[in-house]
Length: 175
Image (tube, rainbow, N blue to C red):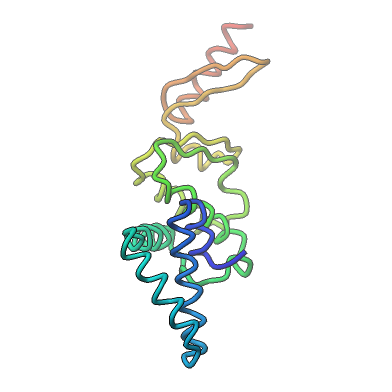
């Protein structure tokens, strides 16, 4: 519910709640500039943000949303499936993770969205663990593979093509 900004900021805790309240009040004030009670509320929230350095969160959230190519003011529920995925990615990234875990990340993305995600993840300063059946995505991003086979995890070093070769050799050895 809410805008892309609201969705992304929501996971940053009470300080972000204050920022979201300010943005909503400021939007309401822009629509009803004669409402003095609303003006006083915006002033109060602005003072609180000044006191707690909440403006740094505003910049952080806006920057992450910009990195994923969305507008902070768009209502989340009107986004396409691919843009909803981008918004959820922004929500995960705003917490500055060291490890990003993705389950079938290319589902609901069109070709351009998949290419964008590949390039975005290649530039990231975090580790990515992903599960995918998208072989082109695997070829583009994999550097290590953990194959799950009959209840065992079998690690492979290298990209998807290397994994195919190593797996074939393993299967031949098992024969």
